[in-house]
Length: 188
Image 1 (cartoon, rainbow, N blue to C red):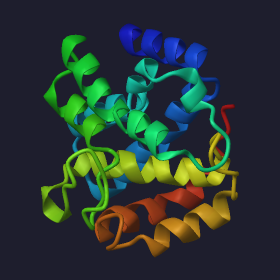
Image 2: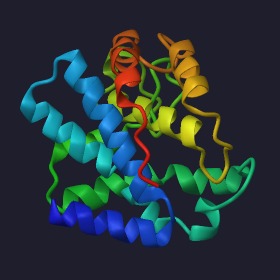
Image 3: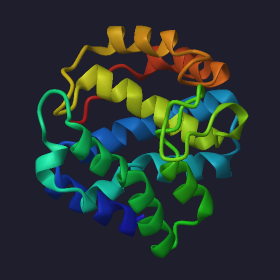
C-alpha cells in the first residue's frame, strides 16, 4: 500500500482534490461490494482499484484536468485515455490483473455507452461497476472542475435513475442500501 499512497500523493500534486476523491470512492465502492456479498479478498481488490482508479490522470496535462465547464472533444479524448494508462501503470507496478482491469473499465456502462471498450451488461467486470458507480456518485455530489457539485441527495437520485441503464440493477441496489449510513464522507 506504500506504492498506492505514493501514487495518490503524486496524483494530488498533479491535480488538487484527487486524493480525497479517491478515498471517498473507495469508501463507497467497498461498502457497496460488502453489501453485495463480496469476499474479503474481493473487497481488498476493490479497495485498491477504487483508490487507484484515476492514477492514469498522471499522464494527462493539468490544464485538461482543471478545465471548467464543458470539455472540448479533443480534450475529452485525451482525458478518456486515463483508463488505459492507469491499467498499464498498475500492471507494471505489480498490482495484478483484477485491480488493473477494474481500473481500466470503471467508465464502462451497463448500456454499452461507456469507454474504453464499449462493454455492456454481464460482460462488465463487477468490480469495475462498483468503482464506476462510486465515482459517478462522488463527482455529482461533490463536483469536479467540469461539473458543479449537486449535493448528496441529488447525486443519490441520479444514481437511482441510472439503475439498469448506466449501472447494473444489483450494484445500484447495493449502493442505495449503504449510502445513507456513509454520511458524510468528507475528506477534502
